Length: 262
Image 1 (cartoon, rainbow, N blue to C red):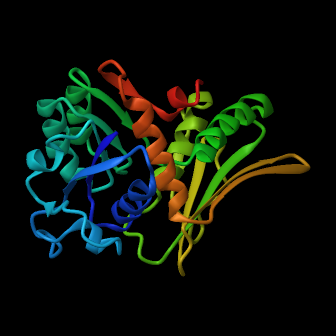
Image 2: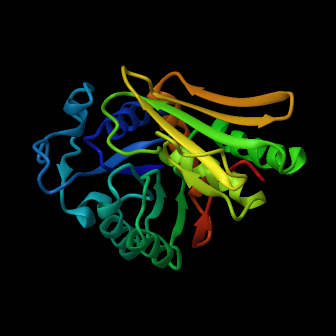
């Protein structure tokens, strides 16, 4: 598989580069970065501690995907529009794990999907996808007497809150409870919890890769469903698995549940 990476100089991008370089079935052919990235023009292999690979980080997204069969994107919502357009123009499948997409980025993915296969996931862990399925089933089976609260923990350097994964888990709740109202914090005399509340709490500190717990609190008992990521490699491996799966697929929008056969 000929692979390009968008957001190549970030933590996830470099992790994907390292794992892709070690995989016998993957050839790195492109690396996209932001226009103001100080690493622009540098060899991706040197940035990832792999030695010279001959793949240079470039802000020219069209050049970054030339010769690629799949591009894996971990960048920013604003950058997704450009990489989606470049992938569509060049006939390159797109796997994006960028979170907190705005309507413009979502439209860009939809437009690209008319021409190439596109898979977007707010978390590329297979376990998180299964967790979301379990959450939906648990909320449905336990019924409205069980309150749902989501707690996520990430490292101190994470810039967005709540996490894309927490929002994905919230969407699993909303499948069963379409009127659920997200509450991101409580302070002072807020009154009793309302039945339509869906609490989502973000905790930040240390070097936590990502912990997510969904609490289902009912009369006389509670159920806690938890996923803990021990290494960023987990997310990179999931992204590469998704990229492999996209090869040869028809144009369209795909999700991790499709990869797992759900």
